[in-house]
Structure formats: structure tokens, C-alpha cells
Length: 499
Image 1 (cartoon, rainbow, N blue to C red):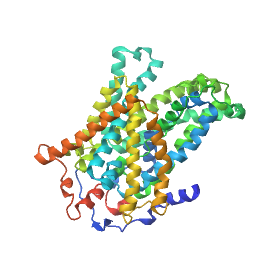
Image 2: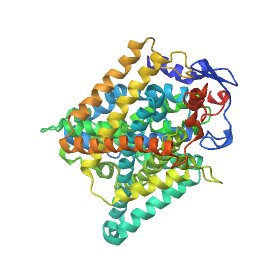
Image 3: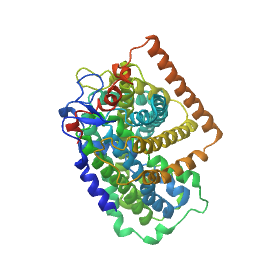
Image 4: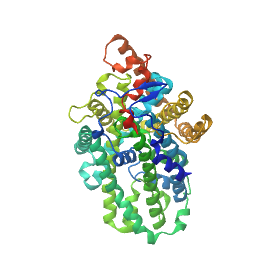
């Protein structure tokens, strides 16, 4: 089955629409005009390898942060978790993302899908849930980077030096994003290679020392809540790169292949270091706190590898924040293209062609949140992300039912609506489980953010009706002959470039 699916992903262009047009709801759609928030010319688009590493950093960035899975349940369950969970969560989410991102290859990703399936209110609410979740997630990275640097330079551990380090980190990554998505993508490739290399060396050095009996150990006092939250936190956000689909070169071919490669790379990126570290050293589960991979590398190969992994953690944090900032900025651009936000968010930098308003807004929000203590808010980010994913799965099934003839350069190889719904059942059940184990504070904070999202939708509607703010002209085409169809294809290049 895996080989058959890999073959389908590699040949996803087999169902491509005609060269110079696409049909949505039976409406022929010509190539969109340039300008505004549309997809970029072929020379400026994101190619396969950078997209793989951007997806990788959206999701994981390496095995850093996987240690609590061992701490909470022991090596046996940690290994089983990172072996099985990708198949019940990552693969279904990636397949849904591949189908919808290639069917509607415009910036905004999941916002487009919810809007198309259920209307603008659902699209706006999806945008709120996913943006807030991503912003909270991204806000942790500047502070985390400062924490890593403080291990080498203790002066950065507090006071003005720490504030300066966080601000400098945020500004540097914002400038990097301003210079163009292609540069961000190739930077992600370099960061990915540099941060994963020490784990490859650790795995090689550990091979002669591995004793399989160590893998069977379990924690005496298991913390299943921490265990499942760790798996979820380390293996979500597969759909985040979909917000940049309008910037991808030939998305019908590139997106499915990139997702398949990223799933494989991420899964191996967790499993191989865990196999090496848990199998080569005798360490109690309770020793496996955050950062223990560096200690394990020191025990296996020496202090030089421990230091390299600590440097790799800083590089990984840079990649994580850069990818998060990119996807959030292009989500705002996509929402502006749909008329869900003012047109200002669709503005592009004159030289680098990047959504500078979205970059600036997201950088400012994450910087402000970097100085707060927000453990409960972080848990709320998981809750909001779960709400968004449930809506995303519902949109996938709804679009299969409502628009079966919509061109899908890649389609999940499941025939019939029941099969499509079944694909979403197990991951949806896990999402409900994650939401059910949250505390009342998480429920309250998530309700506040949701209410704010509803308020933003109606506020934007009022501003549109009164003419207080300027919105995308495409938003006025809703309900016009062919206008609705054009809106979902306009960002994603001509049909000949989709595949």
C-alpha cells in the first residue's frame, strides 16, 4: 500500500486539467492577471527541495523536544509512538493537504478550503484559529533561542541582554523573510542539514553500543497526558505550508512529493536518534528532560558532539521560527485576497515580492508574546489548532461530496464518500481526545479567541459595507457569474503551471 501510494504521489499530474484553463463548478477559468496577491512568476516560485525543508520546519525541525515522550512513558512507548503516530495522524493530514492544496493552489491554504466548503464565515473562523495557534507557537521560538544561547553565554540568561537577544532574533528572521520565500526556503535547507547532521553522527557512533533490551524499558509512573501532548506537538502543522501554495512551482506535482518526502524525513528524524540514544546508554526515563539528546550524545561520542547538538538546537529554532513566520504572513495575504481582511495585507514588497504587511504584523505579535509567560495559552494553541483541523477534515469531506468533478491534480486514492470520511475518522478522534483532556482554563481562553474571531468577521463585514476599509476586488465577485470560481483559482498560476 505504501509503495502504491508513493507511486501515485510521484505521478500526481496524471489527472491534470487542460493546459490553458481550469474548470471549477463547470466554469472555465482563464489564467489570472498578475498583481496583488496572485501567485508569482515561475522564476520566483518555490521548488521541491526548499518546500520539503519548509514543511519539515513547520512540523518538527529535528528531534529536539521529543525527550518528554521517553520521560513520560519510557523508551518502548516513545519508540512505538513515533513509529505508529505518523501513520494515524501525519499521513492522513498530509494526504488531505496534498489533495486540497493542488485542487486550490492559492495562498491561504486551509482558509481557502473552509471558505470554499462552508462559506466566508467558516473561512474567517478557520483563519483565526490557525493564525492564533501559529502565532502562539512562533512566539516561543525567540525566547527558546535565547535560552539555548544562554547555555554558552550566561549573560543572555536575563535582563537587558536577554531582551536584546530576543529582539535581534525576531528582527533578523523578519528581514530574512522580507528578502523572499526562495531565500527562506534555501536557508531552511542549510539549517536542516546542519541541525540534523549531528544526529546522523550520533546514530553511527551508537550502533556498536546498542543493546535492544534497553528499548523494552517503560516508565514506572506513566504520564499519558504529557506523552500524547508530546507526540501531538511534535507531529502537527503538516498543512501550514499550504498557505504558500500560490508560491509553489507546479504545485500539482511538487506539493504531494514534498509532503511525502517531509513525512519520511520527519519520522526518521525522530526514530533514528531515539533508537540510538535509548539503545546505547543506560538512562532512567526520568532523566529524559528537554535537552537530554545533547547529554546522550556526549555519553555516546564525547563533548564535541554534545556541543554540536546544542548548536543544532539554535539552528533548528531559527528554521522553525522562519517557517512559521512565512506561513502566517502568506495566510494573511490569502485572507486579504478572499476579502476576509483588508487589502493592505495583500501588499507585496516592490523588490522582493513578499507580503511585508503580514510579515511585519506577525513579527510584532510574536515579539510581544515572547516576553510573556503563557503555558496555559500554549495549551490553548493546541486546542485551537484541533478545532481548525476538525473543520479542515470536514471541508475535505464536504468538497468531495459537493464538488466531485473539481479538478484535483492529486486525489487521495479512496473512492466514495464513506472512504474519504473514514480517512479522517481516526485523526479526528485523536483531536477530540486532545481537546477533552484540556483543562477549564484552556476552554476559557479558546472560547475568548473564538469569540474574537467571530467579532473580527462581522467587523470586517461592517467595514466592507460602510466602505471604511479597502478590500480585494475579487471579494465583490462572490455570487457573480464565474466570479466565485475565479476567486479560488486566481492566486495559483495558470492551469498549465499547476501541474
